[in-house]
Image (cartoon, rainbow, N blue to C red; front, side, top):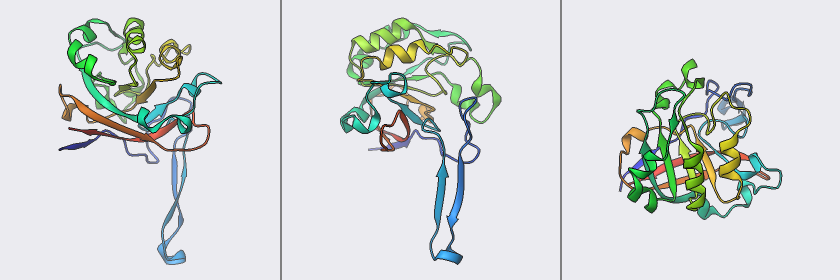
Length: 213
C-alpha cells in the first residue's frame, strides 16, 4: 500500500480566490509564556485544498457537516487533460477514451497540469474547464464528486458558475479544488480519502486529501 498526499499546506502565503482575504496563522501561546504552543487560524472556508458543498451554491443545499462521511471516500481515477490549452474545454472524448476506468470510479479527478503554476500569477489565469456535457455525464452516472488541480470548476472569469450549479444541484456530489501531486499517481485506480474540517453549516471546508494505492 502506498499513500500520496494530495493536499496543499495552508500558510500565510497560500493563494486564494481573487477577492478573498488571505489566511492568517499566528502563534497565540508560546512555550516560553504558556508552556505550550497554540496557533490562531484565520481563513475562509474555501482555502487551500478544499471541498465545495451543495450549500455553497444552494441556500437549501446540504452542508458538509450533515453529509454522510462515506461521501468523502471512494474509488477514483485521474483523467489526464494536460493537452487541453489554456481556456480550453475538456470534452466528452476524455471520458470516452477512459470509459472503463471512469465507470469503476466514484470520484473523477481531472489533471489539467495547472498545479505547476501554484504560487504564481498564472494560477489565476484561464485554466481548462470541463464541458457541460461532461458535467451532465458525471451527474447522470451518480458520481460522488469531481476533483481538480486548479482553483475552480468554472472558468475564473465566469461569475455565473454554471458548472457549480449543475454538479451541486442534486445534493449528492462534492467538488474538490486545488489538489496536487497528481503526477505521482498516473492512470491507476486508487482510493480517494478527502475528509473536510467539520464545522456547523459548512458551505465548504479545507480537506486532507490522500490517494491510497
